[in-house]
Length: 145
Ligand SMILES: [Zn+2]
Image 1 (cartoon, rainbow, N blue to C red):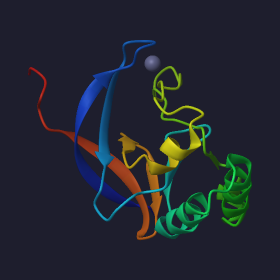
Image 2: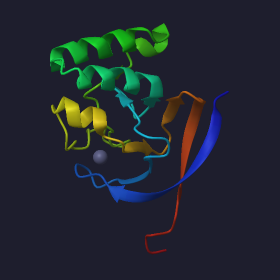
Image 3: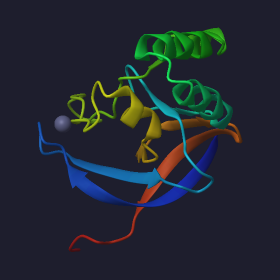
Image 4: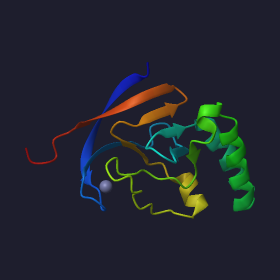
């Protein structure tokens, strides 16, 4: 069984279908979070060590192609069930219509890697260095009753 964790969050509306989406986020708790979203769900992969490794490559001034190849190697090092699950350009999706939400750093690899905002959509699985958790978002009541 996957441990459940409750995060305080908010709601937004899907731009495609207007479905109400409950979400939370992680940011800047312990420096940058290199994170990947799943291709077919909102599951999130967080690996702190990967960020240090890729950041060192960025500091060396290597090309995006080299960094993308390195990301492929890192993702391929995951257990088989996860190896093909995540990719660098996947973003969070509406749980109702499955349309991907717009991503402001699409195709800008440097900004993508530096993006510290990790979005947790209600019901996603967070696979982190500290374990795997099922995310439950508790609305903080910023909406009218
Ligand atoms: Zn939708």
